[in-house]
Image (cartoon, rainbow, N blue to C red):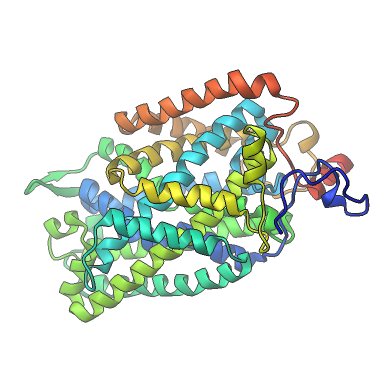
Length: 473
């Protein structure tokens, strides 16, 4: 039998989590290792490297590593904000619970919409890359391959979370091996010095051209997206043991490891590509074939395909928690709230899992470039709003609550706000329109439905144990 968001009013008083109207809580069953495995798998370094980074090679050429490095520096400041807010307010709602609690419910709603855009699009975007890396075995349409991966990931997302942690951990080992092989081959077949990383050149339509600052800024949304998954620790914070300590550890360890796993192969590919044309094409499988032969290329390709499946599983797990929390916090008409809050025998929010997995399969049939650009805009906006909320983290009742505290506050959040606001003005115009349109419609939903019902709708929930800490503070 399943459990739902609103237990029956006849529940006994002794079962505190089952009392009438009490919000459902997820079980704390993850330590730092399990949380880091799941979070690092959501960053899915191999999928980012082999699916997203080729687009950066096509636009930035030898400056790809520089752009990712700049994005990583920005993400360090973002990770500090996430770590402080995530330990202060550890909730499955992630960014919206943090921002909504600290900066107001409307701000939390806007953050929820940006995060919903990201979590609905990213799994499909990654999944579509499977077809390229199954090519040595079978030719399949990218949309069909992506949809199949999303369906498989949805099924896995319905199972026990700890079992998924070990499964994704095994896949993660394989993708790290693939990244290590590419790194070794790239450096072993070096065609140019590391100094080439500071001389931006790219080949477009057969002509070599320099890469300027404007191109780097235009690609910054994608560069931020490359390591974006470290925020998964926030979505899992309600299921992490000792969240006051383990959330920050998981966020920071994941960002550091993912940056190394991605940047080292990018540098190796940059110096090892036979020429600028091959580098700008960004076909990693073809480069590996040229460096080590088709057998090694096939092995690497299959590891990457498994990494993409791994990413799909973890992202579906993460995303279902977002919808679960939104139902628990009554963001929707009551039938939807009940549905999204329903848990199965494995304590997985199964209707929420289906609600992200099935649309994800459909999105695989949308053009990949558009999805990438929209995601870049949403990620930049999401980080900006989290940085704004970080300015409120040491005010009022939150000032003395035990939590991990970021260094250089409030300077880092302020710098981050200014930089991200500028980055947003440089991103793709069509993607800005799509994301802006979705945000405007969502704001109208807030004004017309949620705000008039603010006593019973969009009531942001902090888990009971955290509420008690706030009251004691």
